[in-house]
Amino acid sequence: MNPPVAARASKTSTPSLHDRLKDSSLLRDRCYIDGAWVGTPSRPVTNPVNGVELAKVPAFSTAEATQAVEAAERAFPAWAKLTAKQRSNILRKWFELIAANREDLALILTSEQGKPLAEALGEVDIGGAYVEFFAEEARRVYGETIPTQRPDARLLAIKQPIGVCGAITPWNFPCSMITRKVSPALAAGCTVVLKPANETPLTALALVALAEKAGVPKGVFNILTGNSSAIGKVLCEHPAVRFIGFTGSTEVGKILYQQAAVGVKKLGLELGGNAPFVVFDDADIDAAVEGAIISKYRNMGQTCVCANRIYAQDKIYDAFVEKLSKKVAAMKIGDGTEQGVVQGPLINMDAVLKVEKHIDDAVKGGAKVVTGGKRHALGGSFFEPTVLSNVKSDALVAREETFGPLAPVFRFKDEADVIAMCNNSPFGLASYFYARDLGRVWRVAEALEAGMVGVNTGLITTEVAPFGGVKESGLGREGSHHGMEEYVEIKYVMMAGV
Ligand SMILES: NC(=O)c1ccc[n+]([C@@H]2O[C@H](COP(=O)([O-])OP(=O)(O)OC[C@H]3O[C@@H](n4cnc5c(N)ncnc54)[C@H](O)[C@@H]3O)[C@@H](O)[C@H]2O)c1
Ligand SMILES: O=C[C@H](O)CS(=O)(=O)O
Image 1 (tube, rainbow, N blue to C red):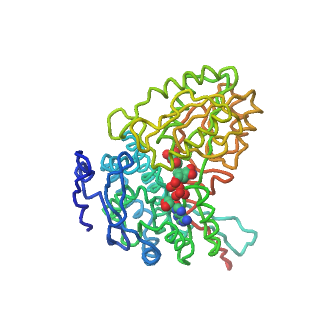
Image 2 (cartoon, rainbow, N blue to C red):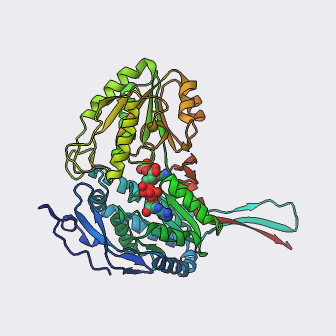
């Protein structure tokens, strides 16, 4: 059992994260490989609010990644041989432990990632919901019998776990991006080696501690922190690894795609987005404002499904911009653990620089800052939630994923005009529009080049739907019963001599 992280006095007078947890044993500073908590804590994890060190984690690399893959390979046969019910029961127990520890998990999450506590609680809840859902799906990996053209033979198709899986996850959702991969993998009978983001490993380590407590056997679920590219290379090239699940930027996704080609590994890629958010003139404008706020400013705009470009039809443009910017200007910004705060700090200063680059480019092209537009008085990586109007359709912010609290509002004339602009992107993850005409809803939903469409809603995330994108937003789907397909291989058996 890993000794809990020693209580560290933070740089400020506020109690340390360790002292604020109900169960401080959830704050882990070692990796978990083959059933043992190992490594020397050396790499600091800091709070984006104030740079205070929360803990240190090991800086592992090639050797440890290889050890983890070999442990997962050894554990695979026994885990795959368990009955679906046995795996389901263990996953159910994991879900119950996540739910029972949701407040501690959310506090760890907010402390290392920055999102408001209310959002972190929501993330832990859906993170747990993926585990609960796939605990149930574990028992529904059905095969089929197939009528054959040979009277002397019988034909069946069976589904079997693909084997050792690598999982590499981003910092923006340190809980749900992990359970969205690991729970279907374990449900299918696979074993996993997880490399979480270096900015937010503590939530992942706590999830593994709870999985261990739930009875996941040694070697089945391994986690290591450290050198991303070196660990990723091992996961892409080791012959025992048969699937790579990656969530992150399209740029890194392409690197992994190339590396995995060497061993012809199956991949699940959940990549970048550039979601259009369209408000037609027959929309409920107040509802559209609410939808734009949750879609744009959730996690300070740091979600892959954030509205990245907002299009408002000419007739309602001014009213929409006025209503939106009034609500945005009223947002409370601060430390996400404080009551009422709805916007925390961005993950780092690079994120701030990207927002500023997009604002500067838009303003140079004639855009107007309606609210926000600059770093917040709190300093550090706090940035004012921003609304721009009169933005040119070819501005940088329309072409690149901002990943920050910036809402550029573009004008459009009609359906054909706006659909052409929406689809003029190499990305196709999420998209949103507000309209009430039934014919328009069908036409636009079918015309948008995206994996997911929100109609009259800015929040589409659920464990029961197939999450994923088209074009350069990725391959495959996570969540829903489709999410199991990543982790199984189909085999058909022709039995002659009947
Ligand atoms: N489609 C989705 O479901 C989804 C969900 C969340 C985030 N994202 C995307 O992720 C991006 C933000 O997350 P991020 O900054 O963590 O992305 P990132 O691509 O920089 O990092 C993602 C993960 O990959 C690791 N990594 C980085 N370089 C690597 C390499 N060469 N080899 C192996 N691993 C490597 C990182 O350590 C991290 O764990 C955004 O583009 C966002 O749209 C997509
Ligand atoms: O950042 C991308 C995540 O997938 C966000 S969520 O799943 O919509 O919460």
